[in-house]
Length: 289
Image (tube, rainbow, N blue to C red; front, top):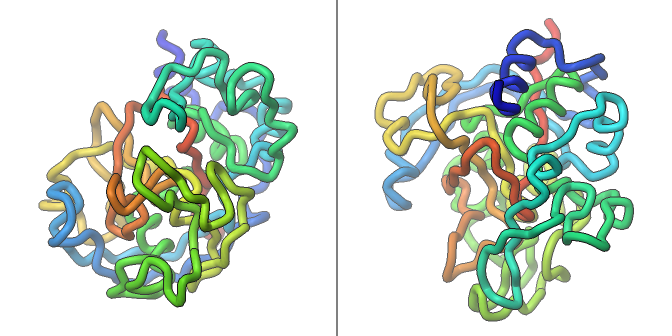
């Protein structure tokens, strides 16, 4: 059985190893209604539609290298990029994506680098399967796409960004993004040219850090361009099948002239067995009744 399918089966049966508590580091998000998506973005970001969600729990921060190392040590989990011997790396010198031989979560910048040097940074080079396995180990799960957008909005119903309608209000940078012309120059005006430690930037209205920028984040849903046309109003969980998984939130590579993934309605998709150096995750859970 292919490694990804075997892991998917393990997740379905709940046999991915001893479980750790889900609640530490999580915040409760009170359920409610909101308008998801937009009518003025990319075609697959709309139409805008009303969604109703139950209460859920979500990690305050992106999962870090330290946290993922604890999981790997406890379970012996080997990531997709470790098995393959490479991962997707954006080379800022060449201005494009390359095959990063030897890059994986333990060596985020390739051979010679170590996750131990960046313990409080978000873990990267993890596939959807790798992320789901970690959340399963914690007794949690990945958030749905709807949960992610609702949490990212932080109670700001009509805002374009998590903090309002201006990208840099009063000249202040609210997220780790690319400043300058992509991919020619990142001026680093937010203090970083690459990843930042989790929690560096101020939280949103619900208390979450980095739901915008730093790394794209895997969510539970399969991707379909037209899903929002007929998606359920109550607790949507994405299409039943697909070939790519959705990720949300944008990353340090998002600029005004490129993906603009820091918009609250922005969504991207990647095969679930792929890892990238700007793609991480956080976990969600259902409150215990």
